[in-house]
Amino acid sequence: MMELLGQWLTGVTCAAIIVALADSLMAGGTVRKIGRLAGGLLLLAAVVKPVLEVDLTALSASSVRMGVESVPAAEEAGLDLMKSIIGEETGAYILDKAAELGIPCQEVRVTCAVEENGVPYPESVVLVGPMSWEEREMLSRRIEADLAIPAERQTYESGGEEG
Image (cartoon, rainbow, N blue to C red; front, side, top):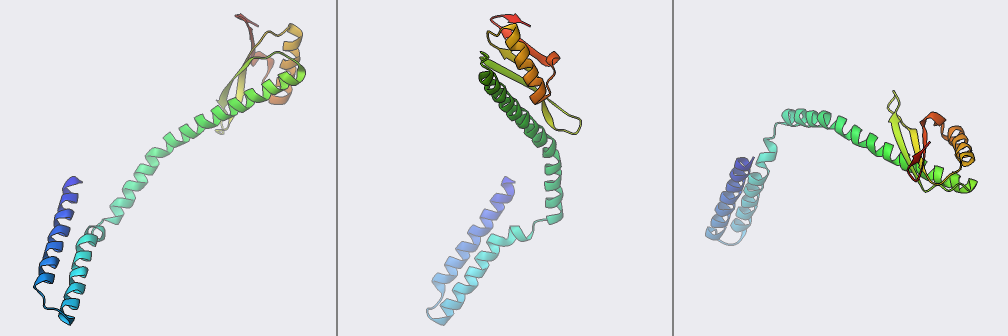
């Protein structure tokens, strides 16, 4: 690549030197105007020549290969981002519902999984806060009804205790 760039630069430089030399040797008037036009066209040809020699079939084949190779990584990154957003939004929703119910919930950690069709969903939740058994039951029913996260996948932590 660097070798091609060096050859291109050398060609453009040589063309510019030739055009400048010819311009300085030409007499004024119409001849000089025609000479400058010809010199400009020569310089343009030197600049554009590499673009005209590009093998478009090889270029398109390599771009397709690059696209195919990057698709799985992009899909995985997109899926991770979706899982993160769903987890954050679900956690915020649970915190809001706990506050509405007057339940002291300090933190919510949501784990997301991916369905067979590739759609992420909230799979399990860990709730942290000094909640009574009745408050846990009330919040658990609400989470199960609103978010379809069964009680078996809900974990409650309170100062080191789990339940």
